[in-house]
Image 1 (cartoon, each protein chain N blue to C red):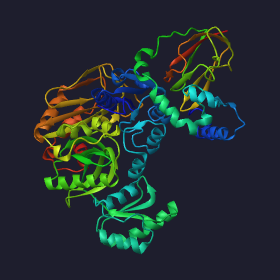
Image 2: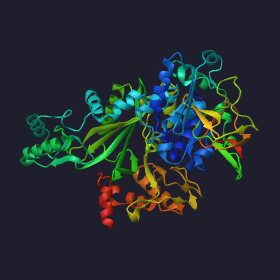
Image 3: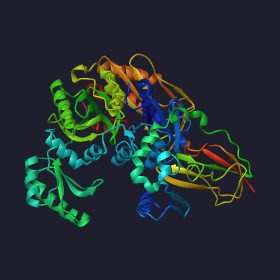
Length: 452
Length: 173
């Protein structure tokens, strides 16, 4: 099935490592798991064709240690490295090291990763591909008069950000024209004092938004989309529930959104699986580009469930230099899929992480259920990595059925010995607001407030 | 490598300097716990590029060839697997186990055809070099660290080794 890639090293851990191992097995490709000392007895290590310990538990010394991973790939003679998500998946320098050492990096080129990873550059590319971006200044503004002009054109509320600021510093929301001149003046002189640079960005401030993203597959020339995913149910920017299709979009909007993502990918001759992220403004019903993720995403299974396309296998075939065999007209969106990201966290206690040993695990099952997880009874969750213990994905003929099925599956599943977010997920998807499909990114926070 | 004060970039600079200085044949460096051995042997390079002589000294020019050879290495992926991992080794109080400090390729001798650094039964001192682990074309010398005698060698020449893999058992004296 594959030409150049006969073996793949998976530079990741947990459920995504397992996900990639499974794809390799179905493609007839040898899978080589890497692992840290803390992950010695985990399912990916057991199920891969072979496994290589690359370092001690801390991620810096193992899963993020570029030298160790390249050395392992060279010493054990693999053809390709799949980075999964997180860790090294969007590190252009790692992709470059793979290229330099004759190892196929399963993802786009280092050049594309760094281009799309630069927010300003990405916005320019989006503009040039006629992909809508949040109305605002085109780059930095250094002159007060110019800034005033731009602000008046955008309308209110708007957000002024010091270009040298960050982490919430040097940002201000301007509610109306009345205070604009004063606000602008203050923030520019504050920025001059604090950062020695008075230049600012100005953009429309969106208050009632959804987070919607488009899944793409592209081979460098052809590009198709697998519809959108709606990831609006977030807590502190952490996605909790993702679904496809989005309950907010009309079919015309869906088509416009997905076509814009394809235009963006074609503009840069994108080659791999990728996701274009947007915010959707509930007030003016418009979508705006925010960034492109040049890797496979945690929530990719929801798109797989409604299209029947195995995104990881397609991604590996593209890395093998094969032409995309699926055409856009072959893609039919069928039914509705929901994913719950299950974390080893205590929702009753501010979602604090709960590492520990799983004394008993029972996976949910039945029609339309998919559990992507590395859990087993006796598995010890190490404290070194993120707290996700698995993803429960449910497909239903429509959204209502998917919610009912997810509720049933969550109660069927048993994870004993640690605290998990399963019950919280059940409450969330059964809240009136989630069921209505009509909510925004602060909905989970207000749901949590109501409870206390 | 993170335990050392010398960064990978420093080493790259060093190897570049060695490469450009035609009068240097071999260089051995020991600094703050780091040991580096660089040797150039153009002829051996061509016939056995996988050996320890595929030196950092020629890294720029040889990199592509070396990689291809690595990739053609037969079946290393298929066979080095679970069976070779963590053999049950009990280390007595009068014994010292040398394990791989990093994932890479194990070499018994400084260059192809050269005698092995050590053999079973051989006397070693703390500073004795017992083998090389190659990490991305960089040759890292491993020392015995103790006075004693080589009791067992668990790895074969040119075999890939993973982090923490037992390499050699030294009987302390």
